[in-house]
Length: 326
Image (cartoon, rainbow, N blue to C red; front, side):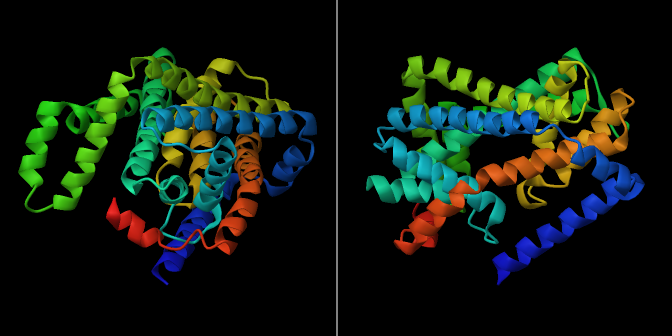
């Protein structure tokens, strides 16, 4: 019941955000903009979304290999697809990342601990690169969102990520933090130790870092290309540099867990950024974000087939026990 209530609240927030964003939008003009979207560009955008997914899977594969977790490619695709689907559609507190490490641990018959470490490091790498790129591009092309300069925000987030990762993974600092909280939070200490050990394994695999960085950058670049292709489908021709700046900021805002998949947050952010820099009609700005959300939902649907298969085979049982065992 609690999970369903949380999901309903997220839907309410999403609707309210859309109401705020769309209050000055001419509905008829918006419909005409979307109706005349070029299907070819949208198809390319949908394919590029899956290119981004493939780069994410390649990054995760490297981490699985480093942590010596054996997982067939076909099974990895199924688990990854289920995680995407769950993150959007399931009214549950069990998010896509939790399903990802649970199904991986169950499939490989290894401890859920290492599966958790692989998923955490994958997410940590992705967010770290996203924050860093947002900082670099706002440094090159300063922008504001509703009058708020983005450069100080992205700089603060970059510094914050550096500090958090330093605390988590630098041996001396990690040991000090562990001693400090050991009595009150023994479970947290155990998880921090797991992540620290995982980082040491990753650090020793020096050749892996180059590929992890390359796939992370390619993943974020693909999301920029997706937004650019959607804009082209609507006849919006603006310099590509703006998408390099806007999309990382949009993706950062969309990670705030207020709505399913960041829907509403994504559209509002993108519209605000467009308005701050160029004179783009609101209907087209909103259409770019809305079509992006629609394509992300549609491209996640194959995960529903895998999810139903896993559920029918009883592979979703025991998730809560696994999360407490990590």
